[in-house]
Length: 119
Image (cartoon, rainbow, N blue to C red; front, top):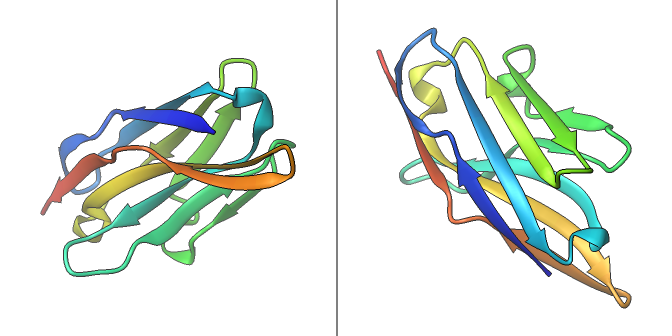
C-alpha cells in the first residue's frame, strides 16, 4: 500500500483560498486514482474531487468551478486548490489513494487536515 501525508489546511475568511497537498510514499508504483474527500461535523465523508493517472478529473457539484485538483505522478503528489471558499466548505479534508498490488486492491487514507472557513 501507500502512506499519505496531507498539508495546507487552516483558517481563512469566506472568499479566500487554500491549497492542500498530499504526498504518497511506499508502493507508489501501484497508484491509480487519487483524490480528496471531506467530512464535516455530524456528516458523512463525501468525495470532493478525484483524479486518475491519466489526469482525468471528477468533482462534486458543490465545488465545481471553485476547486481544482492536480497531480504530479513523478513526485507522487496530489493537490487541491480551493478558491472562493465558503463556510460550508469547513471540514476535515482527507487525501485518498487507490491502487492494486499483485491483483489486490487497496484504499489508503491520510490523517486528515482541518479546513475552517469563517463568515
